[in-house]
Length: 510
Image 1 (cartoon, helix red, strand yellow):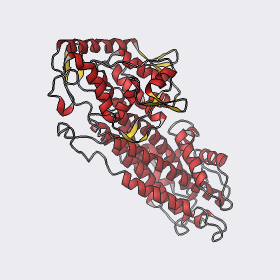
Image 2: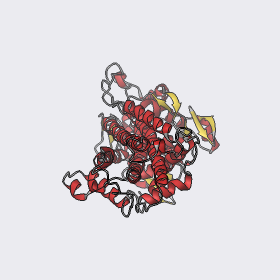
Image 3: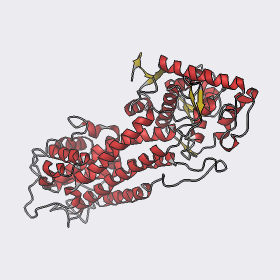
């Protein structure tokens, strides 16, 4: 991605998930590349010629959905596009957070920059201004069917561009026109295909999906670290991680996780120190197989999302070089819906196995000699009894949330739109699964650190020693009962911020 004067120059073909994160969290401004402007202008001119000719063309000189059989005259085109935005702004529920809205706006803008939407470049520039001036439209979370794209939610974003709706500016909710005026900006007048180009696409589910993927990848890294630390606390046997075992399986994620665990445990005096058994329970022995499968799943999701970031998900598509406007179905969110359901399942499994490792540490029947609930004065103290309850509760929530949204469909628009993806719901609940899993892994990390404190001083592994040190920089050992809630949230925050990953020699290495 090119940068011009420290602004991300959008071409419609080079945006990465990491770029989306930087813009979403207000750390990067944007501009539109000259080639994107030229492409937009060419398709916009073709749309303008269709409007003036009166040729019946979906979304330009016709109604929408089941009303597409109705022809709209040239003098009503601007009203058609404005009415589309107003009527479709039917979303309900709480508003998306500022970082999600910034991601949505960026992704819609980047899709317009490809140059097949027929949008007036002035509309695209104003959307860029909203990002750069931190004008955050109020976008309700609920209302998308995931085809045609995320219509209702994106209509709320678009209202601000025409001076309507609501936007957050400097912590204050303002009417759309006032929000623009705060920065000396003026509303745009929609015409041609501008309104439809703004709302017909997968930018909401994609924005949620990009952020969810990046959060899930941090979760994946933390899960590997937690497993390694628990391995030491339970004095596991490293032979199950032997490279030869995993090469025979041929699963890339499994091979990678086994290598990461061995590297993390290098030099550990706790590993292989148990004499009373010859093999570990599955929650330790099968970490490469379970975590590796989730790692492969996330790699697949990254492929799908990376394609969609630079895709055109509009309808109809305007092929300026061919003089054609073609009505298709790129707005259908099924590729994202399936991938994000897969993400939720993969991350939920990380929580499932993490909670079981926590149970082994707090249960004296399973912990290889650790005191019950990891407290020295059991009975008077309860130690980590209830954090395990919390982990179990979150895992059970995840089991419900991991039910695929994409297996559902419901017809709409008088059965013209008779199959939908539910992709936005898949994305929303996938992020809930990730947030729950962050806390489950945080509980495991706290328990493992506490267990190692109780076991006495021995050399930790090359990687696990760094994780342990980071935890103890933020959270002291539990020598007497205290409310663990803040500790859990603190460690979960370290996962989400990337601090847990950053305590490695390099990303992905424990």
